[in-house]
Image 1: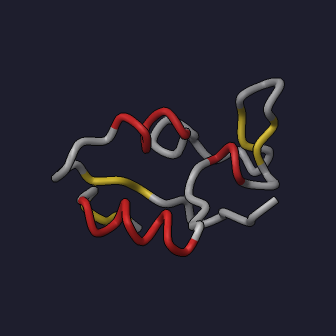
Image 2 (image 1 turned 180 degrees about the vertical axis):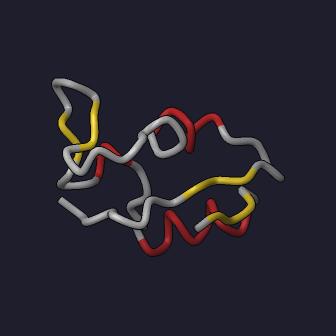
Length: 67
């Protein structure tokens, strides 16, 4: 699933304390920087979300499970 990065998303992320990236997921192996479910992580890393500019598509992993 994807949404456009914008100010509203950033506000809701803060307001509701949304978790979105691999580093917040129980399937992510921090030492190997890999998903234990073998999903690609390129579009789901914290760095990607932090660096997203308004209008960029941000992608959410369908296997995300909060740690």
